[in-house]
Image 1: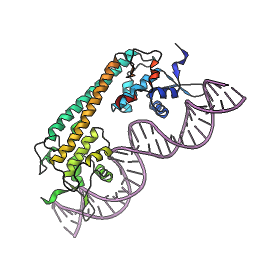
Image 2: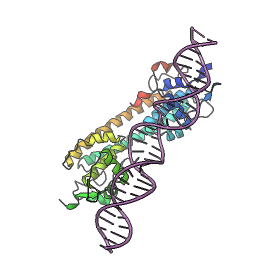
Image 3: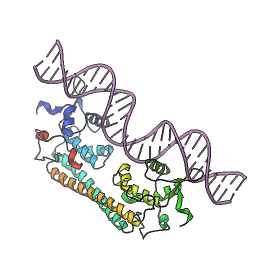
Image 4: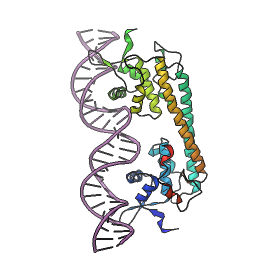
Length: 146
Length: 146
DNA sequence: CTGCAACCTCAAGTTAGCTTCAGATCAGCT
DNA sequence: AGCTGATCTGAAGCTAACTTGAGGTTGCAG
């Protein structure tokens, strides 16, 4: 519609709160793409603001850039993503949040049981265990949050 | 009580599921301590199994080793930690979990609002925003999980 | 008392996710 | 036309949390 559908990297930086260097890094990683001006400067789509906002939110949830990239592939290529596209991908993020909440809730319950005896073994938590009987139970509490 | 209150690093490794190299690294970082045999091999207290279990659980919650170290300072020095000590510190961990759950819940609610319009701005989420009016609202969705 | 798994130290390498720096060019206002 | 802030590239550096490797020593079962 208007000519300034294309924004320079500094603007994208201000609008997303990301450092310019971070955006360039994301481009290297393939999380966003840009076109170049005659003078070789990057120009991004306005819709990349949303795209990078999504990246930040997903990151705060603990997703790695690789996973985020995978999520983002569900956005249309060629066409600028519309509301429906973002709704769809946001719902996927919502699922992620849900499962994280569940995981934490389960851990909290486990921990509650274990606070009772202070054993911190989180599996075979039978009373305090002078002889370290739990040794038979295999290695550590690793599994707790796996 | 018995002579084998002291265990070698390999045993500690098996009992915690941690790599030997990781335990040595933790010792460098000051998360555990050991005594040495005549031949310079490390010997740990059995209670360090719990200590390192705690480390692993806290880590899975996203705490950094520095924060974990801080938590661990609440354990008694000199004396082997008893059940009460572990209960106390575990409760502190429980608080951490609780606040994380709250944070995620808040984020989920925000996101739910935003899925409605697909804007992903998460603050002034008034309908879809062709002119990018939100620009006035300051940089990105940074604050969401801060 | 011998053999060999388990230990030791120290330096360097690894992955993720960026930042910093140097030196050079661009773009837009006056 | 000129100034000045914004951008460019590529290499190197950084933090966290470890792992790997080389070369050497210990400790205990038989």
